[in-house]
Structures are given as C-alpha cells and as structure tokens.
Amino acid sequence: MSKSLHPKNKHNNGYNFDFLSEKYHQYEYFIPEKQDWLVEPKNGEVWFSFEIVLQSILLHFKDCKNPLVWIKKSDTEFEKCFVVDW
Image 1: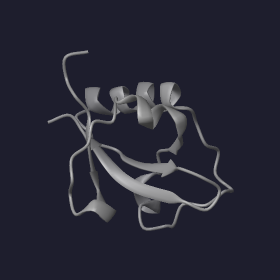
Image 2: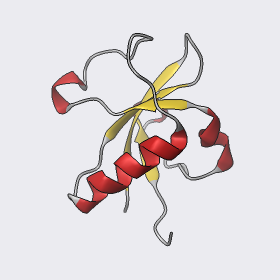
Image 3: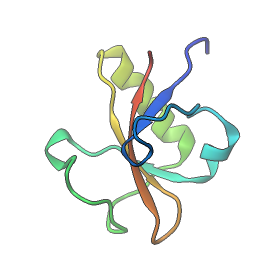
Image 4: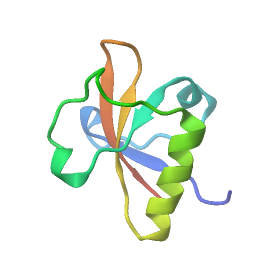
C-alpha cells in the first residue's frame, strides 16, 4: 500500500503517527457513526481487530471520508483519533 494512514489523535494535539505500524495491531477498534463522535468509548461496543477495521477505513477512504476511530488499548484505556490518508 503506497499511502500511509495518519491518525490525528485529539489527545496528542494533532500529532501524526503511522497507523500501519506493528504496535497498533494489538488493539481493538470501533468506528462510530458521526452522531456518536462526542460519546465516550466504552466496553459495551463491539470491538474489531486491526485487520477488520483497516478494511473499513479503506472503504471510508474510497468515499472520500476520514473516519473517527476509537482505539481500545485496555479495558480502561481508550483513545479517539481521525485516520486520514493525506
């Protein structure tokens, strides 16, 4: 894949990091609907593996959308970020 995926993490003041790096493969993910963007992530959601969410992100890119992604790092640690392809 020639394009790099660059999340804009709200907790890191817009810091870019490479979403495709190995360290992000270990977490679980959820892509909320736009009306749920302000909701806090929680354990009640259905979480997906890196491989599955990556396919969903690529579909968003085909529609010229940059999705908000919730990252579940542990049962108590969550992050939100936008994944962009620019």
